[in-house]
Length: 621
Image 1 (cartoon, helix red, strand yellow):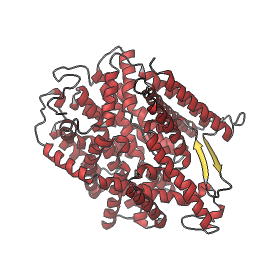
Image 2 (cartoon, one colour):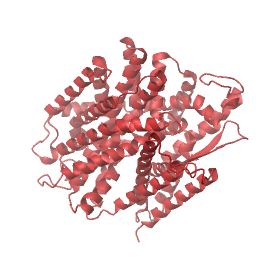
Image 3 (cartoon, helix red, strand yellow):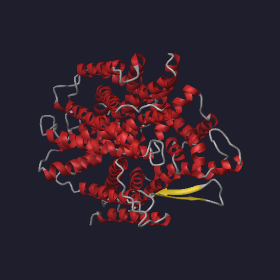
Image 4 (cartoon, helix red, strand yellow):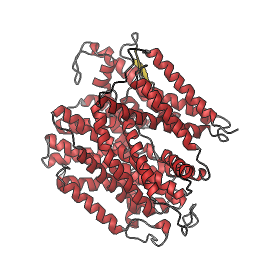
């Protein structure tokens, strides 16, 4: 499609409601809501979801139904602001929990909330500012070439909602159901949220399932292919690698384990050995994905440099961006804050590295999501690469030990946030381009979303850490654990490199076989208990996708909306349970009524049945 022939839904000469007080208030609330839910989800299972579509649907319910206002661009502004919270939270959870884990190991204080807020805000603002000059090249000139899946889908949802917004009820139904289910499982503790069995006839192997709604919803949204790849990695770890370690290890005590292998249960073998193999595969998968995007990176840089300083058609409402003077001035201000603020432990070298890697990966991220979508954006790989180079740079500069490690993670945090926010901004600007929004106002909306999420993310991290601790069974924090191992390994050379090398070899073999490496590597790294329920959700999605009348009814969309609600509901309830744990509010009723593993399986079966029934309930006649 040529850009000359493209006409947005709202013509450039019209000026409907867009950046209103109502849109800002609702959007900010959704930014905090979905930011907190995504932080919990990402720390638990290592995956996050896009909040754009749920935010768009909820905005239609609030603005059109409750407030009787009808402006598609106002709804779009709400989702623009709301989705910023989810993306900023995703960038934060990749790295910042490392600082909490080190504080416990070193006997020091965790990073102050103000420091987290400042890091999150600066990273978010830089992500927006770095992406804005790319809009002409990526969104306008390549419209019809780069699909931007989430951005296009969000525009379709908003267009389909013109005149009605009954879809919001499906999200709220999933949210409420998941919250009640989660409270019964992890609040009242009437049945276990995780069922687990060791296999006596198959030493070292184990099987289990987290019987929770969010994982079922994630699997449904990701689909059968991705969820199957996750499970395949888990099967490789739990039914091949772990039994091999038990069979050949015997009574030996092998580094990094601290007890005889024969005395370790399935969880001990996984945490002492297999987790490092998975970490090697995950790191290699991220770097492989980054290397494969290098040609795309060169193209994007050329287009962005050609666009900067060129004509942007600012006289046209639908083509008006933030002025270049504001962008350059904003970047300079953020860099000065990074280098000069005592609360950010980086200095001049750290600020320079943030600018170089930040702009580098912002351009990569903005284009990659245009092709494969935000869910497949290798932010972890970008962050690992940035932290590896940064750690070596600090070593050469003499900044070693604990200060050097903290500085390396801080750089990684800023780069991860920048990459995540650049991706979100590009998806939102794609939605706005299709609908006829004003880019300048959308970019201001992104800033509002970043500010709101930055103010809340520090408190959420403190709350979750106080309740369960990062790296625990409740909050595995897989990406943060990986970043921690990378920095520690480079700084102190105290890693089981043989195990990590095995993971790298597995990743290379999968790449040779043209198997998506990252999805399998995540499955290897996480317990099988998380992959199994996601796979079940993927099976449900595959069934409804394969129905002959799938194109004629709303089943697949009903499931997506209900699943989005379940993910948000469990995330929100998880934060409330964390607050209860910190305040010593005990709702445990397991001494009155407790159902063991069989009860957990029965509850999960009921959850699946209700999910499927709700999907079928909303189909067209």
